[in-house]
Image (tube, each protein chain N blue to C red):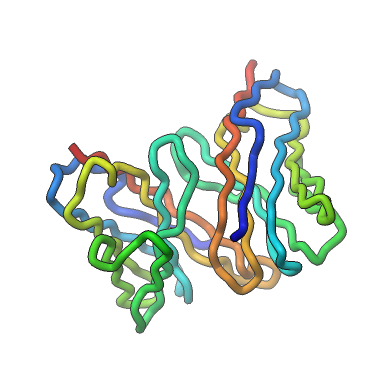
Length: 114
Length: 117
């Protein structure tokens, strides 16, 4: 069975700082996708970034980027120039290609302080 | 991405009763999914709702407890039956993205917060 581990239950940084959230996963599959979702207090799950396992290039979306290390099964999220609106729970998720089932980590509560 | 709405947004129910949650999408989608998020926890897939066929349930979830309907390509319902306080959770529906580069990516509705007394 696939598992996703987020080792940081909570993190807190100052506005404008850079923060990195960790995620590791366990799978014997070679074709899969990895995602980061954000859940602010409004509870809406928002897709932040997506990475295909077959791509060596790390995905980026504006201030959000990932460090995908396939051999190490690591998928960290870097948030640059953090903003107050980045305060949220962040979930790392994994999906085997074609399986249509997302497996989520336990989440990291990120607080951006003014 | 599709615009997804859910009704109700929240509800407080008495144990032993049932609640039906609706999920509406603004475009036709093949796959719709239902997740549960228990308090302080992560999300767990309940079932996949297929149009024209029965839902596919994950281990630990059964049709008698969580019946699902999928009458067309834009709508699905999840019923939480014979509720107990342990069913207090946020229930979220999701759909698969469309368009090249976004296949196999799920987008979520706003969720339904359920409290069972």
